[in-house]
Image (cartoon, rainbow over all chains, first blue to last red; front, side, top):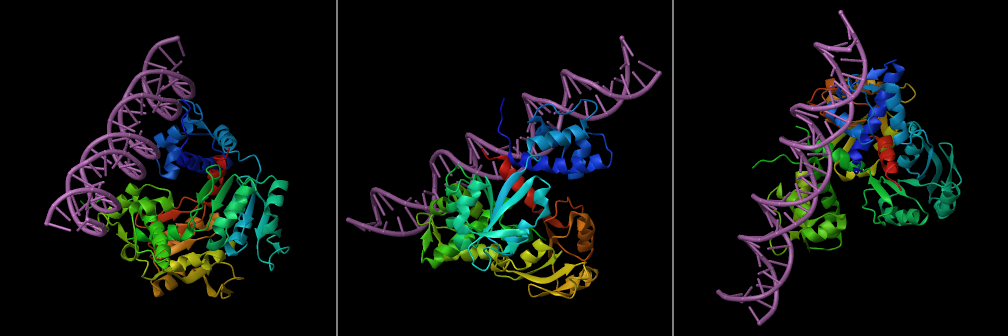
Length: 205
Length: 205
DNA sequence: ATGGCTATGTGAAATAATTCACAAACAATG
DNA sequence: CATTGTTTGTGAATTATTTCACATAGCCAT
């Protein structure tokens, strides 16, 4: 029975959550898989299949209770629980991500930021005092940080990733265009901005 | 014969390109699908299948000529041809993307940046004069811009996307957590930063 | 040349993800 | 409380993607 949950399902779960949150504000009490699916331009069966991984969350003939489903998804995704993250590399992108509001809305809290440059260390960046990357391990352990956002230059990516692994980081959101080689224990997701733009432009016309 | 090329294939093509570029600098003349695949932790058959969409690019018994393959991929992806993009929304993220070096390396050129705020309009942001979003259509046409990067606040996303469509934009890289509703003619790719972080953290432990 | 080796290119098989389709559950109505 | 209509939950079918496996092409040494 216990089937592996696809990453795509988790992604859609978050989309459902956002719409349910909105619908609840609108005062909507119930919604069918079809209606929810239409908002996202997918199939109702996709919504039902996704939700079925987590039990019987709907009522036949009536659909889903908006508030209950929203809360169930929040629990599944642990949106209610604060999760500490650190951002490593205070270039333009790193600094922008520190200030990014979308993370907070899902329970993430930037607990520390790091850089290697003396011009940045001990200075405030968007309200956070930038730490010397030398103290990575110490600070990550002090704050029990499990997730890191990596925005260092490509040349420093692999080396920094190894330091993160040594420091006990469990997951890395990697914005560098580098294939990080770490043990299987560290979960890595890559966001390759240039690739996204290239893929997009390939398919026009 | 003419089979549809999967988006995943295009993404991997770019990864191949980056490694080939690097290998060429190292002076490597030839490489097998297996060796290239190992660098990316995928299968050789995947590399060969991906490349086979574009013809017989290798030599049996000898593998692929690094320079020739790199150039072929550059041509397929039109990396050699400059492509103009605009960035709409000069918040932290928008400003960071304007300065992002990774785009240039793939032939993208930021040709215009826009915002709605009087504090930003006509001021320089990372070397670009910020334009009033009122002039979106005019400037996009003047520069023949086909691709837009959308980094406005969520509330303004749909409305701005419609303006981009009207202005003749062919593709949008959407950083807002909003499902944009446009005609099928406009290609949209979404980068949902908060979702990526949530998906990542869901799968730890 | 010839033979042995190596690595491609590609149908076929396997795996993964999505969609269909329908029995079963529940709501609503009279 | 029976009947009608709606919508879920889920196997089965479909579609997409990855991997296998091998015939075949080309290199290289003798």
